[in-house]
Length: 500
Ligand code: NAD
Image (cartoon, rainbow, N blue to C red; front, side):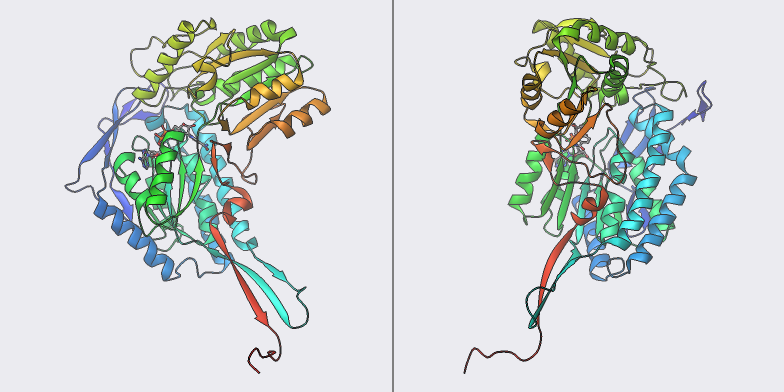
């Protein structure tokens, strides 16, 4: 292992992984292999098999067998809870290892990766309780001759397709809740960040999850991802990623077996700042909302709508904060923002920065790639004088690029906030409770923050309005999404005959 200056190591050669099926690793063998290079260091770190259609079929068959065999679905909630709690313990034991792989493949800072993994422990702990609390409903109001019961049943085999920006966190915002419902899973992580999904599979087996309940196929979205979306024996698919791929998923489900879909897609999320806010707190929150994870969050606050009377002053405060963000070596404990995860994403961000300048927006900070010998990093960037007809104001950039748009009235702020095809998240900053609640009611977004941003916990469901998606993940709602209800009507006593 080559050591960095930080005490963490970079592998001297990329580590070889297999995929995971039926409770065990399957070696890459003669399959094609994808080699991942660390975006923060420019060195190869992992080699992952490109699974074939027959690998996928075998994985779905394994999940189906486990489901129909009732090896997991048939257990009582308390037994499922025991496995989920054990998983939480094992993740806690391996937090450094998982966080290290997140850094190597994604490029995020190590301190952030560690706290994300610890957050995932809480999701497994909560889901253990939810597995025990999951229940249906009853109707005792149909008269003495009848009784109605509504039961919840696990939906079956779930496909799970995840993106590269929070490989372990997004996985754990779904897996424990899906498992709490009693379903089996075939997961397909992003090709560039597969390792921590594979590690979770190994951990789940060690925690006592029956074989076949959690399987991982690896490979590209266009091949094995598309095949998973088209698969006739998958009952539901949870997809998290771009809105454009989301459209392909909807078509694939419609053209195959009408599998139920959960979709968590893109966002162009407003941060609405009123002049009566604590402007220092708001500036810190807005800087965090756009620079955290280098802006590669579906919920990044990428549009700053600010009351005109304080717009220039406030934009300068945010710019000052952003200039102080520590960007660079993700393995350094003090780093706050790491690398841009893929070459393609790096090019996209830089091209939007050029486009903003061409469109006439005024750059007040950032605007360039960082000059580092290895890896790819972009300075947090702020554009003022942005209008909603500019591409940088309406399209998801998925990078540390903030667009400042002034407003004069609360109605105008709400109207600009809603002037987007997306509806994932929004924040408002004000000390006036009437304004805060009015804005929270009228902005169309699945997650809303008042005097904070990018906050949450495993209890609160997440998901989007409009083209940001369908359905909700996490919390009790995130368990119920993976069940279907069955209405059972019971007649009591002697039947009143239809045929005399
Ligand atoms: P992406 O859409 O390119 O890929 C997401 C996943 O889908 C990957 O695993 C990929 O391999 C797979 N995929 C690609 N093409 C596919 C196909 N034809 N069929 C099936 N699967 C396919 O997204 P990304 O670049 O990995 O992530 C960035 C995007 O994800 C952004 O748009 C971001 O807003 C969105 N995102 C949304 C949320 C949310 O919760 N709403 C969370 C994170 C990321």
